[in-house]
Image (tube, rainbow, N blue to C red; front, side, top):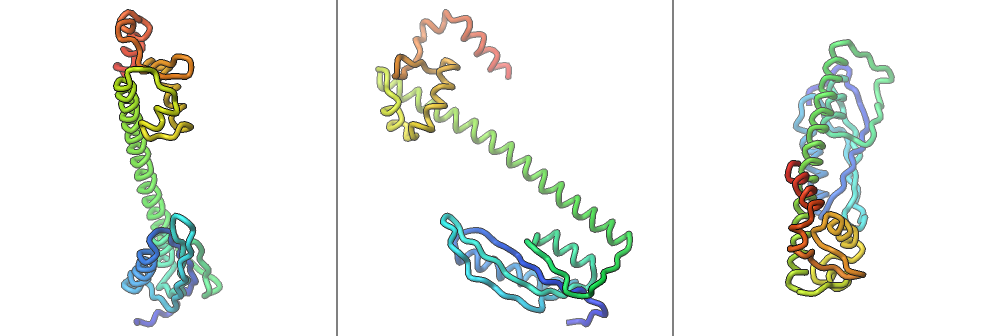
Length: 212
């Protein structure tokens, strides 16, 4: 390892959450291995902790003591690895110049913009998936009602489509309001297609939905 005249020594904690346990342990070691490959920093000490079972996933962390060539290397480490905490051990005073700070903040902003774009894309994809799943469920309910050839109580309908009653009921209320299905007392059935043709109110709503 090349000796650096005035290195920055810092203690960092990196937390990981995931499953299965073995994969989480391998990931923690790979992170430390990737740090050893970087020329601007060197891992002096490392300690891995046993993953804890959190129910649906495992949680673990590793504590590292790292030597950084300069302040820029420390800043880049924080951006790239997102440690949960960082403690500068030495030196007690850090000096920086305008160029170093400018580069750091530009890198930070680029990272934030990338994360923001990824979040927006995932949100849009999630919305499309939810809309498609809702349409599939609605079609399943309508097919179930058509095959039944008689009004069904929500308990029976819930069992046949495989959706718990408390989750299905709000969607049934929505589809009743949109007149995809109708409710007779406490039972559900398909609307009368003949009467729907003479229902200008529904035709107007359907036209508005098609325009959207």
